[in-house]
Image (cartoon, rainbow over all chains, first blue to last red; front, top):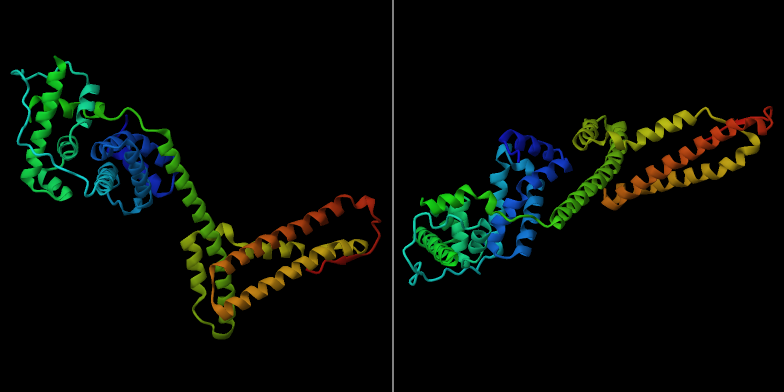
Length: 179
Length: 183
């Protein structure tokens, strides 16, 4: 998929002139990844679809506010994340991580090799809400723990420990399922 | 970053959901088109408002020679109203009909159309009177816009009627007297 900065910039400029086709092309470029982010945060596909619909519309409406046209993707992602976090505001619970499960046996460093990505995707989605959101924002979307702390109104150390918890849960679930 | 984390990062795109329901884009497109239509409708309303403003500007300038002439030009530039310059279109059409002559025996047929035009013009005067008394309001803008559309339609009708008579002139007595159409 062609996604160079200039290409995106050109599309954004066309959207600024209310070009519906350019809107559609931008949507095609980003809709899957944006739906995934929103779904990982809200854990509700219907909500996630509503959120990306609202976010794309907002982005098209406010496109003139975007000064650096090549950064449409990052700008849209921020809208998606903010809207998704607003949706789950007050509902996020962070599980206690006192009893972190360990894999039953010693596992190899390449324990994940051979596990279908579909299975990993399902396992990520099955993580408890709070740690799944942190896992998504930190590893998949490259936010720093400090930024995540601000977004979710939690401490940096909570963000870090919940992230480690998510990794351990994934490892436990996936490596045990493999046997 | 451990190898598993790296593995996830490397396959980030493949871990995305497979597809998005087509209904999502349909809803977005629907909203975008609705907004576009609203914008066109807004432009039309602004065009009507601009026409009123033009009228008032001309009227005021007659007495005060004020500098308000720029306002209409600015509105036109701002909202790209060239396409909607109804008053100009009406004047052009009226001018093209100013020398038109019709057979005397057809005058009655045209009388109905001319009466309708006068009725429309009277309504327009009423709208302007309302604006003078109460200030410009959106619904009046809509009425004025309708007035322009109806007037253009009527003028078109008159024009095509004249053409029809000219085309079938053989059916009439060519030597029958003609009168000037009073618009």
